[in-house]
Length: 365
Image 1 (tube, rainbow, N blue to C red):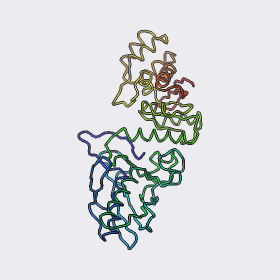
Image 2 (image 1 turned 60 degrees about the vertical axis):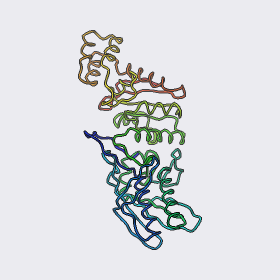
Image 3 (image 1 turned 90 degrees about the horizontal axis):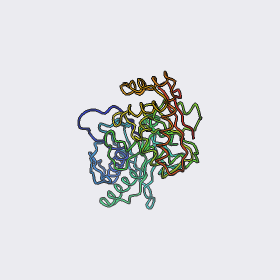
Image 4 (image 1 turned 180 degrees about the vertical axis):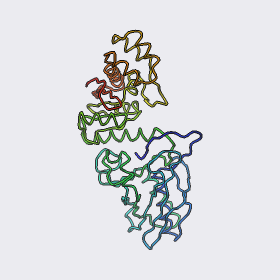
């Protein structure tokens, strides 16, 4: 995943284009230059859903057998780590019958673990961008009388550094970013990219025989799980707020054991049956927490204080001061909600942590 969620700006949001769309447009421009001697600028491509965006070229060079075109990625208003990256496609003519061959240039990762849609050893150029490029090459070959046999090497000069800020190292994609996109379009602040990365993380776990994975809401809870279990990196799933998206995929693609770890506020939402844990899309149910505390022996004044508390952290502090194991109770309820989403093929434990990463509640496997 190349996305990094941030604070959403107000007003209408401008959409952008994926790394795959940029690489495909650059490849089309480069091959057109090899066939005609000129680079189309801007260059238009057709995306899977029929969009026909045009891209201005930021770089171009041409020799007898090799052409290079570059496009600066515009992610629109999405906080994508690859926004502004230069995407280069080097296109080299191959002998007749070679077809379209893809190579990873500087800053594009190589797949090293099974479970991804690209085989081990291949450049991390996903299937849809590959297909867009093949179609563009075939269209140009037919129009201009070319053979359509080319090697496309995609390069992202600062991709190695950018890749460290994505899921790629965890998924076993080494050396840079992935060239991504299923539609070619980046929809600002879309949840789909994050959920797709969760799915790929689960796929990699299964393909590599992981029998214990952890789905964490953030870096603090992930660090706590690592102190407890020392799991390999590819067994750690950055669930974020998407408990529902994680559990639904696990129902169809189970892993034997799953630790769910997160802060008290987010997991109290899961305990109440909420599967989207984002603060802007769901709220902590203070009434539910007051009722849980009453079941643990809280006094009516304590329950009243909980109902009017400002934050989940304040509620947890009130419970701790009263010696009531609210964290354990919330962990148990969250575990029950998670198990209800599954078909019995996954054993679940839930770990609740505070802001310092200390375990304040736990419901075991």
